[in-house]
Amino acid sequence: MLRLPPDPVASRARDWASAPIGDWLALILAPRVGPRTFARLVEGFGSPSAVLAAGEARLEQLGLKPETIAALRRPDQALIDGILTWAEHPDAHLITLADPRYPPLLTEIADPPPVLYARGDASLLSEPQIAIVGTRNPTSGGTEITADFARRLAGQGLIVTSGLAIGIDGAAHAAALETGHSIAVLGTGPDRVYPAVHRDLARRLVERGVMVSELPPGRGPLASSFPRRNRLISGLSLGVLVTEAALKSGSLITARLALEQGREVFAVPGSIRNPLSRGCHALIREGAKLVEESEEILVELAPQLHAALAESDRSAAVDRAAAAPAPASSLPPEQAQLLEAIGHDPVNLDTLTERTGLAVERISSMLLLMELEGHVSCLPGGRYARAP
Image (tube, rainbow, N blue to C red; front, side, top):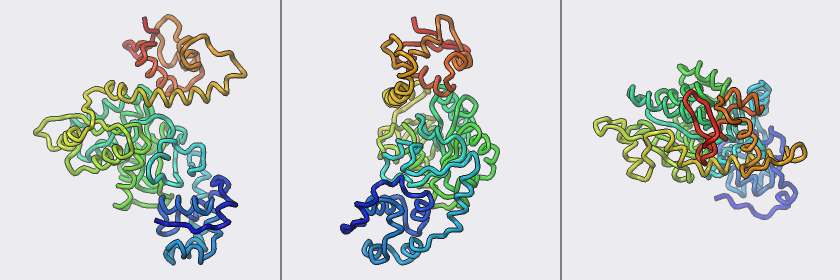
């Protein structure tokens, strides 16, 4: 562990957000500086800029390798400028740990990436997510089950997160985009699509979701990058669902990381004669929740979803306080507004969007919680009505 001796620099620069984005990049791109080393350096010196300004003797005291010190003293400005140029694209985003857009759940893991590189709607990164993972060689039944879960969960307002691999990942992304949104966590830079067969899927993800990576633009696929990607898939999500996996599947790594991170883990059982069910059965023996229907996941996640929505409601209420009186209801203000918009006849999501001005995914999230709490009922044809 790096231990910093007392230094006046630390007391002069405590605000990480004050550092230019170029300094964040110079530090995290230096050789042998991963998320944990980055955090220790910045917490000790006070900011990325202060680390870069530190003398070589101070850096040597920390046990940093000569190549790391050399990179900190003379950052690769061409590489940094290239990343900053990439970030000028309308759908590209550089998100640091000091950025309010940084997903709150990800800050809770042991080694959150100091910088995220994203393409698409970056606001989705902070929305409630369910990760769906599994084998790269699923059976036709496994693909169908995955698509059904993803379609239903996305339709209820959850963002479906996965790793853009062939097989279960791709099926989950594609089905989620039919009814909602999806997030792809990459094992490459955000400008690369791997595997290449998913180029069209990646395009749709940028249009109706987001692709995110802790690796900078230009970074190609390396075997070591994908296990690290798995901790982000689970770290972003409230829970992880494994639909079909062999005993040595990488998706089991994601599930076990989820358990370490305090996330829920769900597994779909299968035939004892199907080798791709054995990974799910092993997870169930280890404590994962056996699920057969998407509603079982929604019930398990209801407390977390309610907490996330309540926090969002509190923020929205502050913005509305000066403009409108609080509704005469025990529901949070935005839910009360939605209940009033439903009226007394069944309505669909399009009608509710027109009446409230809220985004479809926002309405879906609220309807999910209101249904679980008994305030509304879901009717055939995707319509909603007040509960009796």
